[in-house]
Image (cartoon, rainbow, N blue to C red; front, side, top):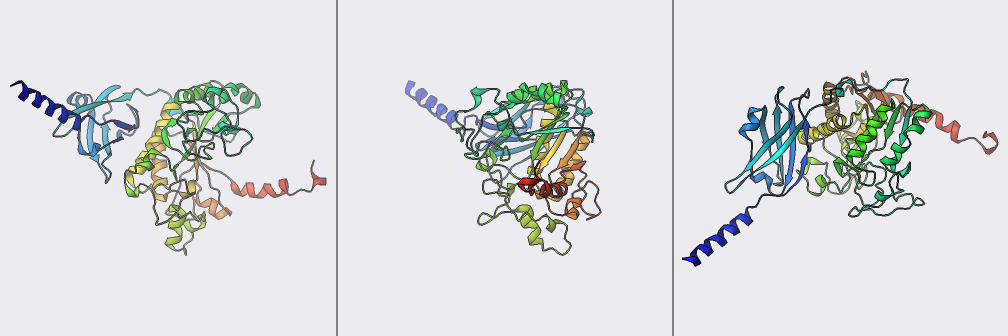
Length: 414
Protein backbone atom coordinates (compact mmCIF):
# COMPACT_ATOMS: atom_id res chain seq x y z
CA UNK A 1 0.00 0.00 0.00
CA UNK A 2 2.75 2.44 0.95
CA UNK A 3 4.66 1.57 -2.21
CA UNK A 4 1.61 2.38 -4.33
CA UNK A 5 1.17 5.74 -2.59
CA UNK A 6 4.84 6.54 -3.04
CA UNK A 7 4.65 5.72 -6.74
CA UNK A 8 1.55 7.91 -7.09
CA UNK A 9 3.31 10.79 -5.32
CA UNK A 10 6.33 10.49 -7.60
CA UNK A 11 4.06 10.54 -10.66
CA UNK A 12 2.30 13.66 -9.38
CA UNK A 13 5.61 15.39 -8.74
CA UNK A 14 6.76 14.53 -12.26
CA UNK A 15 3.54 15.99 -13.67
CA UNK A 16 3.92 19.17 -11.64
CA UNK A 17 7.51 19.55 -12.79
CA UNK A 18 6.62 18.91 -16.43
CA UNK A 19 3.81 21.49 -16.44
CA UNK A 20 5.38 24.04 -14.10
CA UNK A 21 4.38 27.68 -14.42
CA UNK A 22 6.42 29.22 -17.26
CA UNK A 23 8.96 31.86 -16.41
CA UNK A 24 7.74 35.13 -17.94
CA UNK A 25 10.88 36.67 -19.38
CA UNK A 26 9.30 39.90 -20.63
CA UNK A 27 5.95 41.61 -20.27
CA UNK A 28 5.64 44.91 -22.13
CA UNK A 29 4.51 47.52 -21.46
CA UNK A 30 5.48 46.68 -17.86
CA UNK A 31 2.48 48.70 -16.64
CA UNK A 32 -0.02 51.16 -18.09
CA UNK A 33 -2.38 53.93 -16.97
CA UNK A 34 -6.09 54.41 -16.54
CA UNK A 35 -7.83 57.37 -18.15
CA UNK A 36 -5.89 57.34 -21.42
CA UNK A 37 -7.56 58.70 -24.55
CA UNK A 38 -7.12 55.35 -26.30
CA UNK A 39 -8.77 52.65 -24.21
CA UNK A 40 -7.04 49.79 -26.06
CA UNK A 41 -3.81 48.20 -24.86
CA UNK A 42 -1.60 45.50 -26.36
CA UNK A 43 0.45 43.56 -23.80
CA UNK A 44 3.30 41.41 -25.10
CA UNK A 45 4.01 38.28 -23.06
CA UNK A 46 7.30 36.51 -23.74
CA UNK A 47 7.71 33.11 -22.06
CA UNK A 48 8.56 29.63 -23.25
CA UNK A 49 5.53 28.06 -24.92
CA UNK A 50 3.18 30.74 -23.54
CA UNK A 51 1.05 30.39 -26.70
CA UNK A 52 -0.15 27.03 -25.37
CA UNK A 53 -2.13 28.81 -22.66
CA UNK A 54 -5.59 30.28 -22.91
CA UNK A 55 -5.74 33.85 -21.67
CA UNK A 56 -8.60 35.49 -19.82
CA UNK A 57 -9.28 38.27 -17.34
CA UNK A 58 -10.32 37.32 -13.82
CA UNK A 59 -14.01 37.98 -12.99
CA UNK A 60 -12.98 40.55 -10.38
CA UNK A 61 -10.84 42.42 -12.93
CA UNK A 62 -13.66 42.33 -15.48
CA UNK A 63 -16.07 43.80 -12.95
CA UNK A 64 -13.66 46.71 -12.42
CA UNK A 65 -13.55 47.53 -16.13
CA UNK A 66 -10.77 45.48 -17.74
CA UNK A 67 -11.84 43.39 -20.74
CA UNK A 68 -10.02 40.96 -23.00
CA UNK A 69 -10.61 41.80 -26.65
CA UNK A 70 -8.44 39.10 -28.22
CA UNK A 71 -5.23 37.12 -27.95
CA UNK A 72 -2.91 36.95 -30.95
CA UNK A 73 -0.25 34.28 -31.33
CA UNK A 74 2.39 33.87 -34.01
CA UNK A 75 4.51 31.04 -35.37
CA UNK A 76 6.80 31.47 -32.36
CA UNK A 77 5.07 29.73 -29.41
CA UNK A 78 7.02 31.88 -26.95
CA UNK A 79 4.76 34.91 -27.54
CA UNK A 80 1.22 35.95 -26.76
CA UNK A 81 -0.07 39.40 -27.71
CA UNK A 82 -2.97 40.22 -25.40
CA UNK A 83 -5.36 42.94 -26.55
CA UNK A 84 -7.16 44.59 -23.64
CA UNK A 85 -9.82 47.25 -23.30
CA UNK A 86 -9.84 49.62 -20.30
CA UNK A 87 -13.17 51.22 -19.46
CA UNK A 88 -13.33 54.94 -18.70
CA UNK A 89 -14.25 54.36 -15.07
CA UNK A 90 -11.63 51.69 -14.40
CA UNK A 91 -9.76 52.50 -11.15
CA UNK A 92 -5.99 52.27 -10.80
CA UNK A 93 -4.73 49.04 -9.27
CA UNK A 94 -3.64 45.47 -10.00
CA UNK A 95 -5.62 43.34 -12.46
CA UNK A 96 -5.26 39.59 -12.86
CA UNK A 97 -4.52 38.11 -16.25
CA UNK A 98 -5.34 34.41 -16.12
CA UNK A 99 -3.35 31.79 -18.06
CA UNK A 100 -4.66 28.24 -18.24
CA UNK A 101 -4.41 25.00 -20.18
CA UNK A 102 -5.55 21.44 -19.54
CA UNK A 103 -2.86 20.95 -16.90
CA UNK A 104 -2.58 24.15 -14.89
CA UNK A 105 -3.68 27.69 -14.22
CA UNK A 106 -1.73 30.74 -13.05
CA UNK A 107 -2.30 34.49 -12.85
CA UNK A 108 -0.22 37.59 -13.48
CA UNK A 109 -1.11 40.83 -11.68
CA UNK A 110 -0.87 43.62 -14.25
CA UNK A 111 -0.72 47.18 -12.92
CA UNK A 112 -2.76 50.12 -14.16
CA UNK A 113 -1.52 53.37 -12.63
CA UNK A 114 -3.23 56.74 -12.18
CA UNK A 115 -2.23 59.39 -14.70
CA UNK A 116 -0.33 62.51 -13.78
CA UNK A 117 -2.82 65.40 -14.11
CA UNK A 118 -0.52 67.55 -16.27
CA UNK A 119 0.57 64.97 -18.87
CA UNK A 120 -1.75 66.24 -21.62
CA UNK A 121 -0.52 69.79 -21.09
CA UNK A 122 3.03 69.11 -22.21
CA UNK A 123 4.97 72.19 -23.17
CA UNK A 124 6.06 71.36 -26.71
CA UNK A 125 8.65 73.38 -28.61
CA UNK A 126 8.46 76.80 -30.28
CA UNK A 127 10.87 79.05 -32.24
CA UNK A 128 11.98 80.82 -29.06
CA UNK A 129 13.51 77.66 -27.61
CA UNK A 130 17.27 77.14 -27.44
CA UNK A 131 18.00 73.42 -27.72
CA UNK A 132 21.15 71.69 -26.47
CA UNK A 133 22.10 68.25 -27.82
CA UNK A 134 24.00 65.89 -25.51
CA UNK A 135 25.46 62.43 -26.13
CA UNK A 136 25.32 61.30 -22.49
CA UNK A 137 28.28 58.90 -22.68
CA UNK A 138 30.50 61.76 -23.89
CA UNK A 139 29.25 64.60 -21.64
CA UNK A 140 29.98 64.15 -17.92
CA UNK A 141 30.63 61.20 -15.61
CA UNK A 142 28.45 61.71 -12.56
CA UNK A 143 28.54 58.11 -11.33
CA UNK A 144 31.81 56.18 -11.88
CA UNK A 145 30.25 53.04 -10.38
CA UNK A 146 28.31 52.39 -13.61
CA UNK A 147 31.23 52.93 -15.99
CA UNK A 148 31.59 49.18 -16.45
CA UNK A 149 28.53 47.00 -15.84
CA UNK A 150 28.97 43.26 -15.48
CA UNK A 151 27.04 41.02 -17.87
CA UNK A 152 26.87 43.69 -20.58
CA UNK A 153 28.42 42.79 -23.91
CA UNK A 154 30.76 45.78 -24.04
CA UNK A 155 32.88 46.39 -20.96
CA UNK A 156 35.62 48.45 -22.58
CA UNK A 157 36.15 51.94 -21.16
CA UNK A 158 38.72 54.37 -22.52
CA UNK A 159 38.24 58.04 -23.38
CA UNK A 160 41.08 57.81 -25.89
CA UNK A 161 39.28 55.19 -28.00
CA UNK A 162 36.44 56.30 -30.28
CA UNK A 163 34.32 53.13 -30.25
CA UNK A 164 34.57 52.41 -26.53
CA UNK A 165 32.50 53.82 -23.71
CA UNK A 166 33.76 57.02 -22.12
CA UNK A 167 31.80 56.92 -18.85
CA UNK A 168 29.31 59.78 -19.18
CA UNK A 169 25.86 59.19 -17.70
CA UNK A 170 22.53 60.74 -16.73
CA UNK A 171 23.83 61.71 -13.30
CA UNK A 172 26.49 63.75 -15.06
CA UNK A 173 23.79 65.57 -17.01
CA UNK A 174 21.77 66.23 -13.85
CA UNK A 175 24.86 67.63 -12.13
CA UNK A 176 25.27 70.21 -14.92
CA UNK A 177 21.68 71.38 -15.36
CA UNK A 178 22.38 74.69 -13.62
CA UNK A 179 25.23 75.25 -16.08
CA UNK A 180 22.87 74.58 -18.98
CA UNK A 181 20.21 76.87 -17.52
CA UNK A 182 22.82 79.65 -17.15
CA UNK A 183 23.59 79.26 -20.85
CA UNK A 184 19.95 80.02 -21.61
CA UNK A 185 19.07 76.48 -22.69
CA UNK A 186 15.31 75.85 -22.73
CA UNK A 187 15.19 72.37 -24.31
CA UNK A 188 17.45 69.36 -23.73
CA UNK A 189 17.81 66.76 -26.47
CA UNK A 190 19.66 63.60 -25.46
CA UNK A 191 20.86 60.89 -27.78
CA UNK A 192 18.75 57.75 -27.14
CA UNK A 193 19.23 56.56 -23.57
CA UNK A 194 17.61 53.12 -23.91
CA UNK A 195 19.62 49.98 -23.33
CA UNK A 196 22.15 49.37 -26.12
CA UNK A 197 23.66 46.04 -25.09
CA UNK A 198 25.71 45.57 -28.24
CA UNK A 199 29.27 44.15 -28.29
CA UNK A 200 30.77 47.18 -30.06
CA UNK A 201 30.04 50.82 -30.85
CA UNK A 202 26.99 51.01 -28.59
CA UNK A 203 27.76 54.33 -26.92
CA UNK A 204 25.65 56.39 -29.35
CA UNK A 205 22.32 54.83 -28.37
CA UNK A 206 20.91 54.08 -31.82
CA UNK A 207 20.93 50.27 -31.58
CA UNK A 208 18.29 49.63 -28.92
CA UNK A 209 18.19 46.21 -27.23
CA UNK A 210 15.37 46.92 -24.74
CA UNK A 211 12.65 49.51 -25.37
CA UNK A 212 11.61 49.84 -21.74
CA UNK A 213 14.96 50.02 -19.93
CA UNK A 214 17.52 52.81 -19.65
CA UNK A 215 21.04 51.64 -20.44
CA UNK A 216 22.60 50.64 -17.09
CA UNK A 217 25.85 52.44 -17.98
CA UNK A 218 23.82 55.66 -18.15
CA UNK A 219 21.66 54.99 -15.10
CA UNK A 220 18.16 53.56 -14.82
CA UNK A 221 14.55 54.57 -15.40
CA UNK A 222 14.27 56.27 -12.01
CA UNK A 223 17.28 58.46 -12.77
CA UNK A 224 15.85 59.32 -16.19
CA UNK A 225 12.63 60.38 -14.47
CA UNK A 226 14.67 62.44 -12.00
CA UNK A 227 16.44 64.15 -14.90
CA UNK A 228 13.10 65.06 -16.47
CA UNK A 229 11.76 66.42 -13.18
CA UNK A 230 14.91 68.45 -12.56
CA UNK A 231 14.75 69.88 -16.09
CA UNK A 232 11.13 70.95 -15.68
CA UNK A 233 11.89 72.65 -12.37
CA UNK A 234 14.35 74.84 -14.29
CA UNK A 235 11.98 75.45 -17.20
CA UNK A 236 13.97 73.15 -19.48
CA UNK A 237 11.94 70.92 -21.81
CA UNK A 238 12.78 67.27 -22.39
CA UNK A 239 13.23 66.06 -25.99
CA UNK A 240 13.36 62.29 -26.40
CA UNK A 241 15.21 60.76 -29.37
CA UNK A 242 13.31 57.74 -30.73
CA UNK A 243 13.97 55.20 -33.49
CA UNK A 244 11.25 53.37 -35.42
CA UNK A 245 13.34 52.12 -38.31
CA UNK A 246 15.66 49.62 -36.64
CA UNK A 247 16.98 48.04 -33.44
CA UNK A 248 20.22 46.41 -32.39
CA UNK A 249 20.72 42.79 -33.43
CA UNK A 250 21.08 41.82 -29.74
CA UNK A 251 17.58 43.05 -28.89
CA UNK A 252 15.68 40.29 -27.11
CA UNK A 253 12.93 40.56 -29.74
CA UNK A 254 15.51 39.84 -32.46
CA UNK A 255 17.24 37.00 -30.61
CA UNK A 256 13.83 35.28 -30.36
CA UNK A 257 11.80 36.71 -33.25
CA UNK A 258 8.04 36.76 -32.62
CA UNK A 259 7.46 36.23 -36.35
CA UNK A 260 9.51 36.07 -39.51
CA UNK A 261 7.94 39.32 -40.74
CA UNK A 262 8.78 41.23 -37.54
CA UNK A 263 11.79 42.50 -39.53
CA UNK A 264 12.59 42.81 -43.22
CA UNK A 265 14.66 39.80 -44.25
CA UNK A 266 16.71 39.05 -47.34
CA UNK A 267 18.65 35.97 -48.54
CA UNK A 268 21.82 37.86 -47.58
CA UNK A 269 22.58 41.13 -45.85
CA UNK A 270 21.02 43.95 -47.88
CA UNK A 271 21.59 47.59 -47.06
CA UNK A 272 19.19 50.45 -47.71
CA UNK A 273 20.06 52.60 -50.71
CA UNK A 274 19.62 55.78 -48.62
CA UNK A 275 17.85 57.26 -51.70
CA UNK A 276 14.83 59.10 -50.33
CA UNK A 277 13.99 60.43 -53.81
CA UNK A 278 12.50 57.00 -54.63
CA UNK A 279 9.66 57.78 -52.20
CA UNK A 280 8.32 60.71 -54.21
CA UNK A 281 9.50 60.04 -57.76
CA UNK A 282 6.40 59.14 -59.85
CA UNK A 283 8.63 57.25 -62.32
CA UNK A 284 10.53 55.19 -59.76
CA UNK A 285 10.53 51.40 -59.77
CA UNK A 286 8.72 49.94 -56.77
CA UNK A 287 11.74 47.73 -56.17
CA UNK A 288 13.88 50.83 -55.64
CA UNK A 289 11.40 52.29 -53.16
CA UNK A 290 11.16 49.01 -51.26
CA UNK A 291 14.94 48.71 -51.05
CA UNK A 292 15.16 52.23 -49.66
CA UNK A 293 12.54 51.49 -46.98
CA UNK A 294 13.27 47.83 -46.19
CA UNK A 295 17.03 47.53 -46.54
CA UNK A 296 18.97 47.51 -43.28
CA UNK A 297 20.62 50.68 -42.06
CA UNK A 298 23.68 48.67 -41.07
CA UNK A 299 24.65 45.03 -40.57
CA UNK A 300 23.97 45.10 -36.82
CA UNK A 301 20.71 47.06 -37.12
CA UNK A 302 17.80 44.83 -38.29
CA UNK A 303 15.12 46.79 -40.13
CA UNK A 304 11.73 46.69 -38.40
CA UNK A 305 8.60 45.98 -40.43
CA UNK A 306 6.14 48.62 -39.23
CA UNK A 307 3.52 47.29 -41.67
CA UNK A 308 3.14 44.36 -39.29
CA UNK A 309 0.34 45.65 -37.00
CA UNK A 310 1.93 44.01 -33.94
CA UNK A 311 5.17 45.90 -34.57
CA UNK A 312 3.32 49.16 -35.24
CA UNK A 313 1.38 48.93 -31.98
CA UNK A 314 4.48 47.91 -30.03
CA UNK A 315 6.44 50.97 -31.19
CA UNK A 316 3.54 53.39 -30.75
CA UNK A 317 2.73 52.21 -27.24
CA UNK A 318 6.38 52.39 -26.26
CA UNK A 319 6.58 56.05 -27.25
CA UNK A 320 3.36 56.82 -25.35
CA UNK A 321 4.69 54.92 -22.32
CA UNK A 322 7.81 57.08 -22.10
CA UNK A 323 5.89 60.33 -22.67
CA UNK A 324 3.49 59.44 -19.86
CA UNK A 325 6.17 58.03 -17.55
CA UNK A 326 8.71 60.83 -17.83
CA UNK A 327 6.70 63.85 -18.99
CA UNK A 328 8.42 64.16 -22.37
CA UNK A 329 7.78 67.51 -24.11
CA UNK A 330 8.94 66.73 -27.65
CA UNK A 331 10.06 63.83 -29.83
CA UNK A 332 12.89 63.69 -32.31
CA UNK A 333 12.47 60.84 -34.83
CA UNK A 334 15.72 59.27 -35.95
CA UNK A 335 16.00 57.97 -39.56
CA UNK A 336 12.49 59.21 -40.20
CA UNK A 337 12.62 58.72 -43.97
CA UNK A 338 13.18 54.97 -43.73
CA UNK A 339 10.00 53.84 -41.97
CA UNK A 340 6.75 52.71 -43.59
CA UNK A 341 4.78 55.66 -44.95
CA UNK A 342 1.46 54.22 -43.78
CA UNK A 343 2.85 53.64 -40.29
CA UNK A 344 4.25 57.16 -40.03
CA UNK A 345 0.83 58.66 -40.68
CA UNK A 346 -1.00 56.30 -38.30
CA UNK A 347 1.64 56.77 -35.61
CA UNK A 348 1.49 60.55 -35.46
CA UNK A 349 -2.31 60.50 -35.25
CA UNK A 350 -2.07 58.19 -32.24
CA UNK A 351 0.51 60.39 -30.50
CA UNK A 352 -1.35 63.65 -31.09
CA UNK A 353 -4.64 62.05 -30.06
CA UNK A 354 -3.09 61.32 -26.68
CA UNK A 355 -0.94 64.48 -26.45
CA UNK A 356 -2.28 67.31 -28.65
CA UNK A 357 0.53 69.71 -27.67
CA UNK A 358 3.37 67.32 -28.43
CA UNK A 359 6.10 68.68 -30.72
CA UNK A 360 7.51 66.12 -33.15
CA UNK A 361 10.38 66.72 -35.53
CA UNK A 362 11.86 64.18 -37.91
CA UNK A 363 15.43 63.63 -38.99
CA UNK A 364 15.37 64.09 -42.77
CA UNK A 365 19.01 63.71 -43.77
CA UNK A 366 18.26 64.02 -47.47
CA UNK A 367 19.62 65.87 -50.49
CA UNK A 368 17.57 68.58 -52.18
CA UNK A 369 14.83 70.93 -51.09
CA UNK A 370 11.96 69.06 -52.87
CA UNK A 371 12.93 65.83 -51.10
CA UNK A 372 12.99 67.54 -47.72
CA UNK A 373 9.64 69.22 -48.44
CA UNK A 374 8.14 65.78 -49.06
CA UNK A 375 8.43 65.10 -45.33
CA UNK A 376 6.92 68.46 -44.34
CA UNK A 377 3.76 68.31 -42.22
CA UNK A 378 1.44 69.39 -45.05
CA UNK A 379 3.17 68.79 -48.36
CA UNK A 380 2.01 69.22 -51.95
CA UNK A 381 4.91 67.21 -53.34
CA UNK A 382 2.88 63.99 -53.07
CA UNK A 383 -0.75 64.03 -51.99
CA UNK A 384 -1.06 60.45 -50.70
CA UNK A 385 1.49 61.08 -47.94
CA UNK A 386 1.08 63.80 -45.30
CA UNK A 387 3.49 63.40 -42.41
CA UNK A 388 1.70 65.85 -40.05
CA UNK A 389 5.09 66.56 -38.48
CA UNK A 390 5.46 69.79 -36.54
CA UNK A 391 9.09 70.17 -37.60
CA UNK A 392 12.03 68.81 -39.59
CA UNK A 393 15.78 68.81 -39.31
CA UNK A 394 16.90 71.32 -41.95
CA UNK A 395 19.77 69.59 -43.72
CA UNK A 396 19.53 71.92 -46.70
CA UNK A 397 20.64 74.75 -44.41
CA UNK A 398 23.40 72.49 -43.12
CA UNK A 399 24.63 71.85 -46.65
CA UNK A 400 24.57 75.59 -47.35
CA UNK A 401 26.57 76.74 -44.33
CA UNK A 402 29.08 73.88 -44.09
CA UNK A 403 31.35 74.82 -47.07
CA UNK A 404 32.08 78.41 -46.04
CA UNK A 405 32.77 77.26 -42.48
CA UNK A 406 35.06 74.36 -43.41
CA UNK A 407 36.74 75.36 -46.69
CA UNK A 408 38.43 78.58 -45.57
CA UNK A 409 42.18 78.74 -46.08
CA UNK A 410 44.41 79.03 -43.03
CA UNK A 411 44.99 82.71 -43.73
CA UNK A 412 41.25 83.45 -43.82
CA UNK A 413 40.41 81.79 -40.53
CA UNK A 414 39.71 84.19 -37.71
